[in-house]
Length: 480
Image (cartoon, rainbow, N blue to C red; front, side):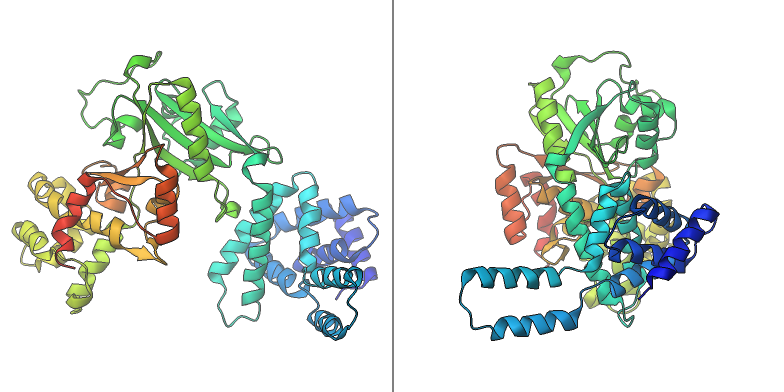
């Protein structure tokens, strides 16, 4: 491992250099010193030095360090195996000895890097540092190959760090806050930067999204002050919205009036539409916070507007267009029996007039790829029915490990929502056309039935839908 002399020398050199540069051996030495040194003399300085060195490291250096940490500071297997044999051979039956030995075995199964995570978490800014470190760890997992000797070590360390963060980010430790135009400039700036679903164009756009008939809520953590963890944008409307253009300020028609800017008529507010939810911290991936934010916002809105009885999302369908294109490619490559494009005849008939001597599906593939179909009004009308049927099939039937393949659908269904309605031309922005051919979906929350629907989906993978959505499934279900 590392000698105490080497660690002391490296720490001294880093302090003198004020961390103008940081090498991988220096990061390793500091981590080893923090983990293995029994006494904590200069411990705070070592932590600061390590954190600075790590932040200055390149992506490659961070990846190598994380592999080193996962491999070198795992458990001592030889020591554990010897203790386990001793435990099994012990014939004493006294409970006191049995529990003592089991505690020792449990301690031997705890990787050394766990203490490192705890030490970092207790330091100033340490929780945020660990969240960012797990983000780096997730990047590493995506790039590392199974043949790598550290492959399973890294994945196991990720599981342990995720479980630790999950304990620190339970509902009892996070706070629900409403963001308004009077909130701090720093918070507003972060809300703008973190918006991942419908990008905020400028300060005027941001002001509209936190102003009248809009609500913006965030989860914050006491160990990450001023840092939004999850952001939920909500529109207060008179009916369940079918188009995102009016909500985010992109007017489809110049003649369409702007919403009032300085007041709210509570009498017309009947619905709350969750139109954007963004998790801002990559390192918290896999830790369920969004559903608690939705539940908390429902309570806030009901308290402010008792007449609001309809809660629904207006959600994108990322991946739908890519799925359609992949099904078309299967047919073009001669593997039609594997394709799920069950209504290909209708698609071919719609595109035939615009195929220009191409195979209709080849022409459709091109029109989808460059969004050219949207600029042909007649084709837009003819594609509505077949694409809406395919989208319904995609959301309802395409599964992964028993749950909806689409990540947004899976999120809302796990929260207890139902697939309520598909909306043609719901998002005609370049992003909406490129992700889902303009289609958006409402996932509706029936408060009295949410828990039953959630249980049905989580336990059995059964998706609950409205009768309106189910009608879109019928033409294709007969072909399954």
